[in-house]
Length: 199
Image 1 (cartoon, rainbow, N blue to C red):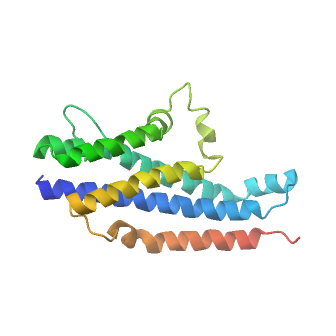
Image 2 (spheres, helix red, strand yellow):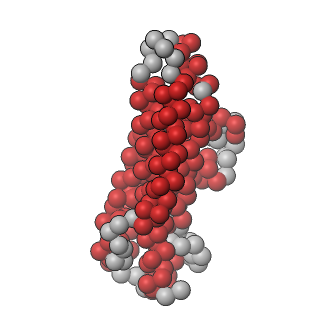
Image 3 (cartoon, one colour):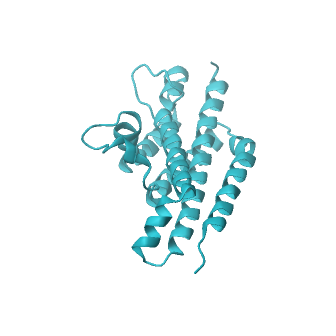
């Protein structure tokens, strides 16, 4: 691949991560809005958790977050002979420059946020000591703090690559898939309205 081609592929992975984090957060907001509207009744909370639409929203919230973390992990791969679309692959093929130090700083932030452990121990490898029961991985939505940490990293990558890699300002990945997500989101909103019991 040419230098421009690998830069373009890196930009695409950043857009993909950005989009899925945004959508994961939107689903979390919808979930929290409905959850906050409940009285603190254990019976109402159990009914809420058992609604198919709640299970659907949590499932998608988690899967979207996982996809974003997988994209970030790929970008931050650090091997002697990198083969993935990553910054290491780019620098090993096209030489080191001042951008590499900036990427290393962002990579350190990724590790400090423990997103690499999330990917390694829960998503990719299901580490026995920390993964829990595989069936329970979709019982609860991803906490907002994790989405915010990942989004902060993506925003830094976007700012850096916009200048150093000449990434376009618009996220064309999101532009392409947004109509599909909007249909899904509206379906979730409508399902919540239909399943609300009278007070």
